[in-house]
Image (tube, rainbow, N blue to C red):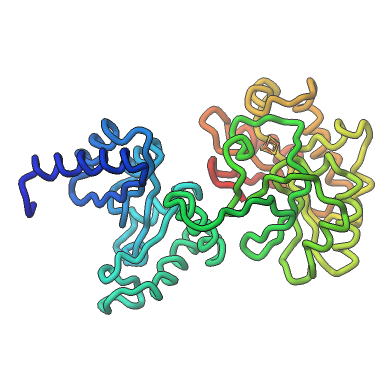
Length: 355
Ligand code: SF4
C-alpha cells in the first residue's frame, strides 16, 4: 500500500489497456490482492495474454488465471520448506501454462537462500519443479522455453514435427498423427506440442527415418511407440522398428488404443511376440456407453474389442497395463475391477498430463 488502492486499481486497468493497444502480453504482479487482481483481469483482460509473475496465490486463483489464458510463473519459493500449497499448484499446472523465473535479486532458491538471486540459480528452481512433476530438468527447460517463446513472441518455434522425442530417460516415437478414436481429452485437437516437443508431422516417417532418429536404443530406458496418433495403424513399421530396437539391445513399449485387431481385421498380437516388451492399452471407461461418448471410436464394437485385445495381449507380451484418464464421469473403481478381472495393472492418468 505505497499508494491508495483506488489509484493502484486505475493504474492496473490503464496498463492492461495499454497492453491491449500495443498487442503485448501483461506481466502481473499480484500481492495480497488476489480477488481484485482476478476481477480486473476477468473484466478487462479478455483477448490478451499474460503471466502471473512470481505466483503466490492459491489453487483457485491459478485455475481462474489459466481459464483466462494466463501463464503461471514459478520462482524460488517452490524450493522453500514451508511452500506446501505452492508445490501442490506446481504439480497441477498443465505444461501449456507453466513458466519459471528468478525474481532476481530476490527470493533465491534453496540451496542459495540468503544470497543475492541471479539467473544462474534458476536451475535449482527448475530442478525442484521437475522433481515435483516427475520429469527431467531438460523437460522443464524445453517446456518453459517454448512457453516463453509463445507468450513473448520471441525466438523461432520448431516448425517441424519430431519423429523421436525424449521425455525423462525414455525415447518416444511419433510415427503417425492418425487415430481410430477421437477422444474428448486428446491433446492432438488442442495443440501440436507434448512436453515442449512439436509432434505435428508433415509426412509419416519411413522405418529408415525412424531408425535414424532413434540412434542408439541402448542409451534410453525404453523406446516407446506413442506420438500424436495410434501407432498400430502402421503395424508393419512398428514391427520392423521394434525388431531392430530389440536387435540393438533396447526395450520396446507400445502405447495403443487397443484397436489393432479391428484396424487390421486379424489378430496382430502373435506378430508382436518377442519384439515388444510392454504394452499400455487405453481402457478409458468402465462401459461401452461411456467409452463411445468419450472416445468416439470409428468402430461400433470398439469397447468389447479393446477388452478382448487386453486379454489376448497377455499371451504374447510380457507386460500388459491398461490406462484410464481421471475424468469426472469415469468410475475409476469399476475400471480397476475390470483390470483386476483381466489380470492386468491399471494406471490412472491425470487429465491434462500428457507424456
Ligand atoms: S486414442 Fe490416443 S491418440 Fe487417439 S484420440 Fe484418443 S488420446 Fe488421441
